[in-house]
Length: 312
Image (cartoon, rainbow, N blue to C red; front, side, top):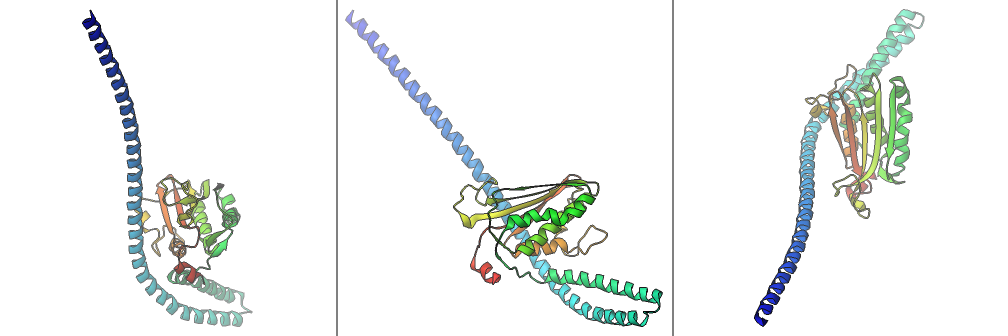
């Protein structure tokens, strides 16, 4: 009888140990499963960051190659612009003399006015050309960027109203002071806004958004606000217009390329030069028939001694 009781006790202990071991194994399995999920999530985040880094490098490489090509074109165009300006000055001088000579003849005087208007139009085109070929010398300092952003609607108000465009803006966490050239940034923003309005002749939505992002984060929110040297200004101007054809997108920053009947094709090239002078980049995303978004990214603070020296 004692032997049977001992066997029962041993079996009970064995079942108890088995249950305890099963419970512990189940807990270990759950912990391991949770760890695998966490590691898998971390791996996905790192793969995403790696893809973004590779895309960033590819974009920068393309931009460097484009800049080399543009430098050669710019040097030649600059020389041509200077050469053409001299005879234009002579034409304008003789046109003004003829205008005085024909002061009593309205019809002939009108011809000289048309001639002067044509000269002024050519001079304006050459001025844009020289602005493109000459590397901007930005007056970098801490300015109130929020005020500049809020002023875009004011400068574009006439065309916005005329084209029945709905304007909206979203300015997130923009600090009081941002390191940039106020005039250059305003020029770029207004140029992009007017282009967006021009792309919506039948009306649509124009949206300007801006925030501070952290380049080490996979989202648009800054993951570490203490890393000031990695914070960047992120500005997006979006429209719901006709969009840009896929085959056209790689050419839009090239000088003299334009899809408009009237235009020099230098606006976006000048904008790109202005943002490059800030140590930043311009990107574009567009779908034919669905709209376009131009994104500007540049450092929030002083980044290096080179920029500070260029600033004066």
